[in-house]
Image (tube, rainbow, N blue to C red; front, side, top):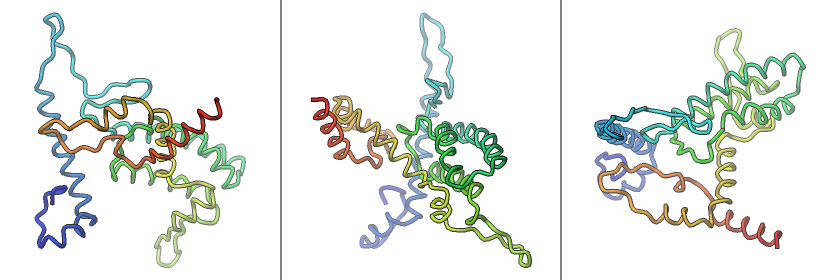
Length: 238
């Protein structure tokens, strides 16, 4: 398999294999290994200015967002999760003391906690692992806001039963975290769809020996919808 490197035979099973969980997980691990090798090579390089060696840092903050030297957004995701947990801890106490309904709690959650959780997510390159981390926090928060669709423990068997994510999100008036990320991406796409820099990036070729990392503009974005939105906005201005 060109994606994960697993040997597959016969050729008729290749298409089925690429859609399997084994191939998806193997591809992600392969990309991580190749990225680690590239980072090790880049760290061996030394840059100087006026004869003095420049300090090398693994991550730095720019406009409130963490940028990693290996171009991996997982550190930013973990940082935002930590900030969102603290924000949700303070907000949940207030909502419980006011006995707010699930729908009202969901509105405050979107306005306060989700603004912290998804800050900068418009240009994140999210792997399935990162998306699961965000979705897990999102669902656990919805469990705490819900009244009917809550995890319950059987008094006799001591076994926990969890309602479906769809039911609990519907009770609190929320969508999946993937939906909100796509909405943010689509909003940014409306601003850059007609800019020359986007065409330059999409037409560029990968350097030889570079890891097959997915770029931001290769993620699910409806560029046709973005062009239609820009066209409608131009007509309104005219």
